[in-house]
Picture 1 (tube, one colour):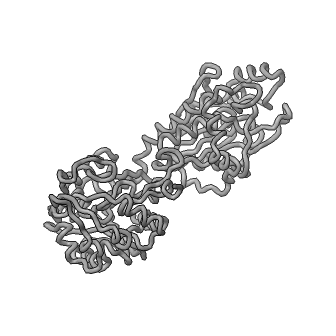
Picture 2: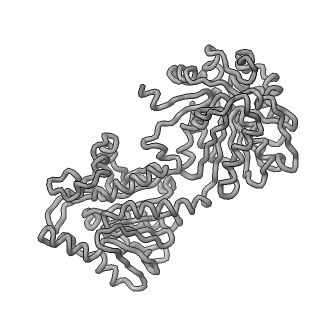
Picture 3: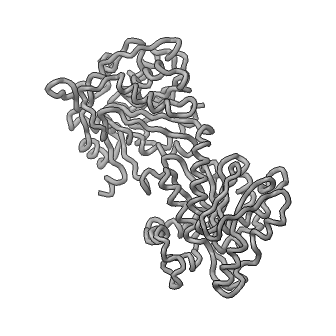
Amino acid sequence: MNKLIVILVLLFSTLPSFSQHNAGIKGKILMIVSNPAVSKQTNWPIGVWYSELTHPYWIFSENGYAVDIASLDGGEIKFDSFSDPEDESGYAAFDYVSLGFKKDPNKAAIIKNSIKLSAVNPDDYKAIFVCGGQGPMYTMYKNKEIEKFFSDFYETGKPSAAICHGTCILLTTKGSNGKLLVEGKKWTGFASSEEQYADNYVGMKIQPFRIEDEAKKIPNTTFVTGHPFEAFAVKDGNLITGQQQNSGAAAATLVIDELEKQKQNYPTYVLVHGAWADESAWGFVRNSLAVNANVEVINLPAHGIDLTDAAKVSLSDYAQTVENRIRNCNGKVILVGHSMAGIIISQVAENMPDKIDKLIYVSAYLPKNGEDILSLSKKDKQSLVGNALQFNTGYTAATIKKDVIAPAVCADCPDYMKDILVKYHKEEPVKPLGDKVTLTKAKFGSIPKYYIHTTNDKAVGYALQQQMVKDNGGIKETFMMNTSHLPFVVKPDEFVAIIKSIK
């Protein structure tokens, strides 16, 4: 059963396992937290405030982002006792989000092994988020390492956030121009009135200084606060700040809003699956591509969970489905087609060339004007598929003989994947396979094209792949992968590296 959760493979496809819904499909966000310390004011063990990690974490995950947690020293992190929903004080007993996080064994493993900040590659993240708690006032304030990391990331233009006492870093963090990052900016952090309330609550001074008091001493900056202990967050450019522990979700939402605006800064890949497959075909590579890009995956009519009658589907329907998604993308897209989808992306490129930056064919059919899949497949002497087709009574849909599926599609897959290939095999509409493409030199011919060969392919033979590339004459560059028909499943890292190398 665990193997099924990890990978549910449809023919020519895989289903990814996400930690939470589709977390990771839009990229990654780095949350930075304090290492454990001891307060010189109270002698309490201090660290991260639960809700300032868990509530933003939830927002990011729910919006499709994977989250990594880093700290200056790495290793296990600790939480401020008052923020623990199970603390005997009952101060945070209402915080069910943090309670769920605390009880999740997967999350427990994460907080025991935070990433050392010096080991982080900032290019792997689309945003950063510095959490508060009582720890940062001792572990992050005037710390040159985190100041430089935050400043460098901020100057890339990507969303850079800090909340509550995590904003103490902004009191001293300077940009490459030697000026404080908050100069000319509006921002917030833990308010002095809230500090006073906290001091009164415990009967002693908790913090060595107050962020608002220090911020008010800085010229040419605007420190603002909302109502005490109510959610309040501020965005000024790509700098995002939150006031206190109840502002984590509000600050995270501003990060998400900014990321939506910044989609135009990233290339957009539109991935189209092949025959007898669905959108989950890209499960092993989708998240990796999304680290530095926007990624859209297509589910074609009559495939996967789509209930369209196979007899009513044409190549035009496939193309229209892809085109509709592309129209919603900012700017041009990089259109990637696997196997049968080579025909589809070719027709889409002809229909809307102004929206296509480049075409990438992955062990795919590469047609000339007037060709179709059936005519091309008849030239394939290496494929095991052609002689193993089984048609329904109306010849509107076809399947592949069960004993041929795995050898044809993924001979180099592990046995359990081969079993699942057979289990989830679904009939393929026949009409699109015989529909001919209409392509012109002025439109389709004007778009840069690239081809990824699979040398051990028994679905679309390597010899046919080479012949189509030669016959088409418009391929700018080819790449070789020593795999079966599923290179993005068998060697996902190599596949992503190739895709990203195509400029």
